[in-house]
Image 1 (cartoon, rainbow, N blue to C red):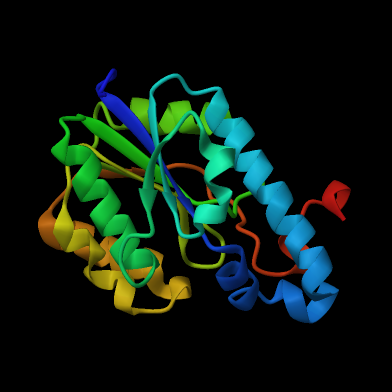
Image 2 (tube, rainbow, N blue to C red):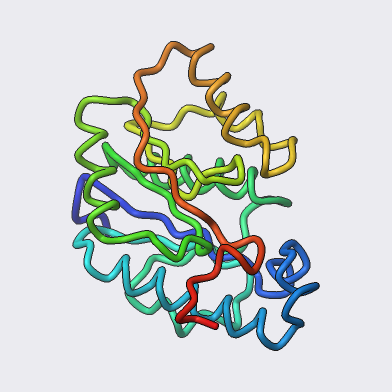
Length: 195
């Protein structure tokens, strides 16, 4: 049931897929990579818990169902991250929200303050982006569903930000950036106190 005009979506990747798509595994091995992914998941959940609005999660792995009791749960949507993002935004906006922000679970420096800043930015911009240092993004927010913005997802994640900006400019949308943050792809991206 829709309670707020704003919604938050978490894209929760399958752990095995996340392990396979990170360079961490080659450096610290499977076990430590799983520990780091677990810490990222906990950090993302804790950060989102401070935000009081309707929350959705796209679960690629239904074994994690119990971790998301306060969320409206979508099973895996689409065949890849881009299609999952597009479908999730479309479904959430279709229920009547005016502002929707999506985050992944790979940004250790994401904070409740940044989430609040994203929603404030959507009062004056059609799109808000949290750029990642590796060329992707850790946050994407919109005032309504813009399907054209997801055509870039056929490229590798390191090119997503550039392709997203091209699509935004082509649609002549007002947008703004949040601070650039690291997402965890390799050992250097992991906070020292997590190791």
